[in-house]
Amino acid sequence: MVSPSPLDPTRSPAAFYGAELRRLREKAGLSQQELADLVFISGTYVSQLEKATRRPQEDLSRQLDAALEGDGHLERLHSLVRATRRRQFADYFVEAAEHELQARTILEYAPLVVPGLLQTQAYAKATILAANPLLGEEKLEEHLMGRLERQALIVAPTRLLFWVVLDEAVLRRVVGSRKIMAEQLRYIAELIAQRQVIVQVVEFDAGAHALLGGMISLMAFDDAPPLAYMESVNVGHLVDETALVEKCRLAYDFVRAAALSQEESLVRIMKAVEEHEDASHSQ
Image (cartoon, rainbow, N blue to C red; front, side, top):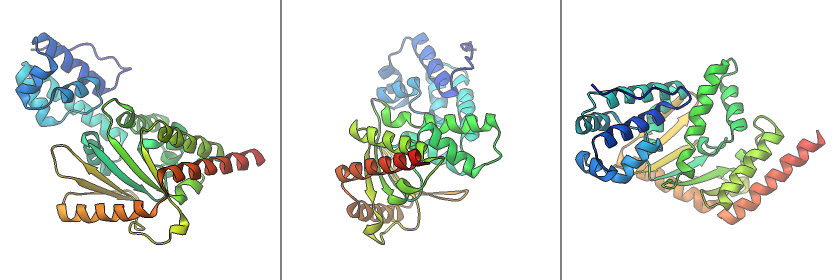
């Protein structure tokens, strides 16, 4: 029976899982690549699991236990990670969040609010409380932690390619306050300047376009077929039918063709920052 390391309550379950994986691997005298070869994944994948930039899957946890003689330890930790994610996210988004962690690229169209991967803490808090005005402080913190932890995907050394098209309504809608909006949009501008994301804005003057129906997120993977995720109030839907995902991808291409270039979009975002700051100062 493997003796687990003490659980540090300040660490996330995913970080604890990664630490335990590394402990078991080193105890077995294996390098990351040697362990990867035993379970038919890449050494990079093992590294990401140990650093908690990718979340474990149940089947893989079972295979790692067998390779490292973990006696089910990693599989039990996987269940803890999964349970934690269910507390952090709405039930309809949990599966999409798991796929998001495995994605190589994510293309998203946001018609009304800033995508979760780009939200500041203040903006995220305002959107969570708008949907759940009676949410207790503990639950609020869990939701905030889950949303902000996701953002490691776009700042990690092996980060995914995140391309988002923002409707002009996202820039104009006041979420939280004018000050929060200015900080949020300035943060997006910084990510663009640091070349961590690609952001385009589709202006109202662009007229009708192919994604007026709502938000969509298109995920592509190295070793799995692409997926589309669509969401409305309290409902999320994953699409894996190849022909339908391809239609969604074509619609996304039409929209980003109608949007401003990234350079023009950055100018438009900074203009919106100034507008919110001016309005905030005049209040």
